[in-house]
Image (cartoon, rainbow, N blue to C red; front, side, top):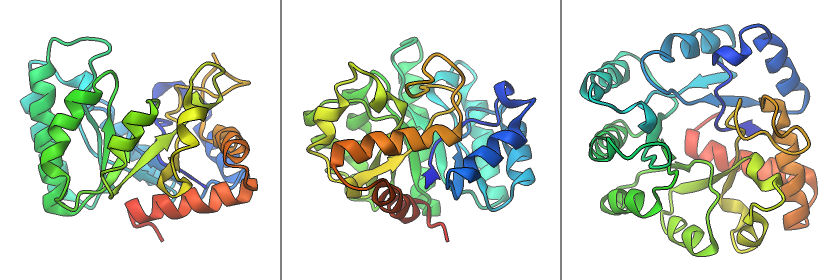
Length: 255
């Protein structure tokens, strides 16, 4: 399996990140994708990647909740980093209107700019889409036939929303611990989404699956997400792992 979205470089894992990685490997996780947040998170993320080369893969991007009056300076850092080395993806980028709408216009500018860089460099994107479905699709519409690939991170939407997102043929839906929540409604939605369009993710340390909900999430809990998908799709557990790994490798070009 591949954890396509994990922030295990954050401070919550300072004392046991080695054990976290070992537990991830023990449940069959072959790769972990590390989406960036902003310039403050960058050194920690790169340090973890250097400690586990070929296993942890860093992405570069400006998270929408980090967009503020200084967003142009932050974008310049992203631009310089994109020039400095090869990255697995551009992310985590997007629009978040859940916490604050103050910098909505700046979020849109930042999203457009980072998508354009991704297209230029032929890199996939990791799109954050919290409480901003219509606004995000308004931005994405102009790139629908650009060849852009990526993941709509933490999909928790309706059947109608899934249908609209699946029109972006180069994109997968990221499924995490929310699928195990009793009232998420995702089970009904996913019954109409082909397994060939899903990838697994944890978003650790957030969105911890049942029965660990309320505690710190970690990459090894991805097995709980796969087990739930096995129930929904009525296929063996290993088939969930194989198909979602194949899907992730299409996006990230992993060997």
